[in-house]
Image (cartoon, rainbow, N blue to C red; front, side, top):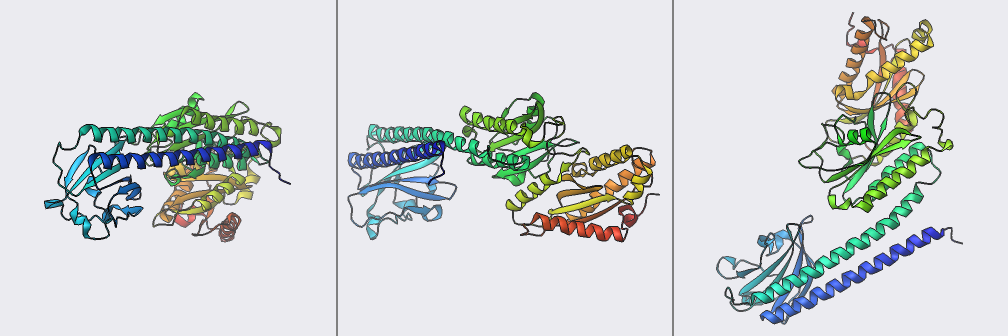
Length: 512
């Protein structure tokens, strides 16, 4: 017996109906284009006519239809720009007559099997332009010379306008069918967000589902901790341009959305405005930033982008906002455990770091989305703990020890050294940090942190005057997929450093 619910069946039926309508629309468009091409050939007295789409992404000409009263004429479905004689006219924006003699004698009309291509004297090219770009070319071939003005302008114009009209009608119908399918997908997405999950799983699912609704885009989620807001989960295209751990800065699109509490839609011109941070890769297309409130406290921000700004219709924006609302209401339920202290960061700890479970989920997603390793920045896990922590805890009150730990987490933030990374509280006095950096950058970041802490201690601020730290780092190898193994590896390295008392400042030269 099937376990499908009535809503699932209805959604499946709607999608099937929409796909059937789309197939019918495509078939009717092809029939109309073929008939109009025949009419063009007959009305101008040409021997062969055909129409190609211009696929600029793949650099191919794709055959739509062809008609000829000659024998031995065979067209290929797809031909690369380099191999096709039409390549010099890919940007043509008005009808043109081409004399194949003289300088154009080198044209290779490959669809003629025999040498009858040498009989072709004139070509009539009719381009079709959409959004300022030539998207298709219709061609009529003549075995006689055709002079300028010989062909009736009304005939060429009528053909051009007819094809353009049915093309626009087809595009409009395809868009409407796509919108219908989006609503069906959105209903399915909403169901996916209502499953039994914990907070990390739910937020991660939100990002994946939001990215799936884009065409040439993706989605990221920012969460707050004790020091600010950082990107955690990412999905979709170009996600490597917004790395995990990137810190949100003032006057960015995300910051303005969080400040106002309202969704903020932005078109990006020349890379501006920035989505999160001035150092990010210049943005293109459009973005939608949506703040997320849980139990009346701002806890997250979803940012969705697409290279095609026209994808962000009112209905599409409503879908994203509705998804965020569903997740926010879910997280406010008592079973998620956030009702006790709703003002605290959603997935943070009392010391101001992210909790370990969040970092584990981030690492899982990083492994899934990993691109081939290149020279330069690499992924690292770093563990840091105060040296002689037990002595530190014995000679200080619990309140003072907690204050030292909070300041330590704040100062460890990779953003202070211009790096992207996340700080999590591992256990007791140990912090676990995920960063992407060159090894020298990682070493400088640790040394800068230890020196700053000692300077603050000598100045009588928070830290003891003799504060020092022990750290161990582990470069995550390419192809690694087990988060637990990585954490165990860096913990093993830290234990070895603790046994040997290899503190950061002693290894680099004490400030005293």
